[in-house]
Structure formats: C-alpha cells, structure tokens
Length: 107
Length: 163
Image (cartoon, rainbow over all chains, first blue to last red; front, top):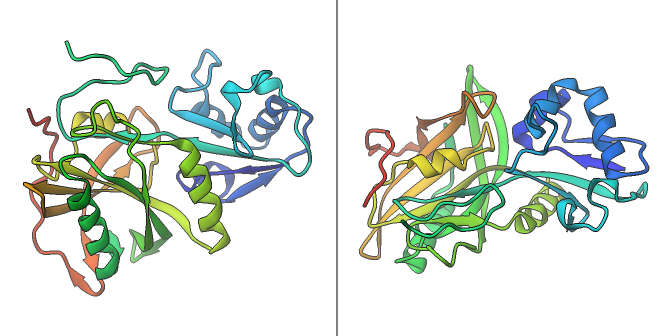
C-alpha cells in the first residue's frame, strides 16, 4: 500500500512524497514506515507511544481513529494511507480545543 | 519567501472580505524550492475551504482534515503540493496569535494572514513555519513577492491576541 507523506515531513523520508510498504494492517504499515525512516516516529507519536493529537491518519477517505478496528484495520495493496497534520488557528481570544478536538466554553 | 501571483493574492484577500465578520480559511498550492539559500514557497493556486469552527468563527478557524486529504490528492495529480494556508483576522491585526502558533504543524509551509477591517481587506502578511519539531517551531515573517514585485508594507511580526 501507499503512504502519502505531507511535504512538511518529507525531510524524514529522503524527500519522498510517498512510500510504498507491504502490510496487512494500518499498524503494520506505520511500523514498516518507521523501520525504514526511524526519525519519522517522533513526529507522529508521543514518547509514550500514542498518536500526537494533531496528527490525522486517513485510510483512503476514512479517519483511522474512528474505524471499528482503528490501527488494526486490514489494508489492501491498493489502499492509501494519508498523514494529515491538523490546521487551525484564529486571531483573538476565544474558546480553545481539547486534545480530542472538542470546543471548550469561554470562562 | 512567498511567491504568489496577483490573481491568487487578490483572491485570498477577497475571500476574507466575503466571509467577514467571520474568519475565512484555505489552502495554498504550489511548489517548494530553494533560491540562493532561501526557501521559496511558490504559490500556483489557492483552494477555499470551510471554516468548521461555527462555534467561534469570528476569531477561530479550522479546516476539516477530510478536505485536506481531498485537496492534497487532487493537487498532486496536477504536480502541486500544499505549500501553505491562509486565513483572515476580522478587525484584528495581520499577525499570528498564540493560537495560530499552537495550531500550526505544517513545518516548512507559509501561513498567510489578512486583516479585514470593517469588511475591507487591509494588510496581508506571510509567516514561514520554521523549525524541526513541535518544541522548536516558530512563525517567522517572510517576504511576499507578488508576480515580480515585493509587497512593501510588512507590519512588525509578533504574537497578539486581540480582545
């Protein structure tokens, strides 16, 4: 399967825009990616091994964290895994987001 | 440096006017290159996106990652990359805020901000997200070159959370 690498992280994949890996699950695909490019791990995962909150993994058009089997979801050779960092911001004081992306009310 | 055509530059500013008093947002498409040791983000086009922060659209924006997936795939088919993002600050300076920095994760990309005052686009500034990790990232003001001419009016950079 193919893993699409965002331009901002290609410095860790020898500037390759995508990486092809052999894998049976999303987790295996990610592990293979890290085996090939060890520096990549810290940009996607925290030291304790959880996915950083601003990193979104999409298996084709489905977000991995909301799939029934999450990272254990089976993959096919023709599948594409996209790594998409979040994009947000704003100009003034206002409600923030929790790590899970839920809006918090103004105090 | 951000290189951008007058047409795209005007388009992203106009987007901010259309969504006023809410923040607009979108994606900049183009190519990364180096020129005499300087990083150049060359913009070929822009894609408008929906601001999903309906709860606080006057001072917050967020782009649905599903839109980014779609935009990234279609742009690559055209040989283009996501080289940056733009959004507007209604009645607020064209400076990055602490929220802008905290939520910026596309290192190497340009973050373009347009101040829209009472419905009219004013200053547009661009900031390069420098660094290598979340711990050392920084939004650094960069020059905007519009189709062969340098944008003359850059306000001083800095974080400002407007009230």
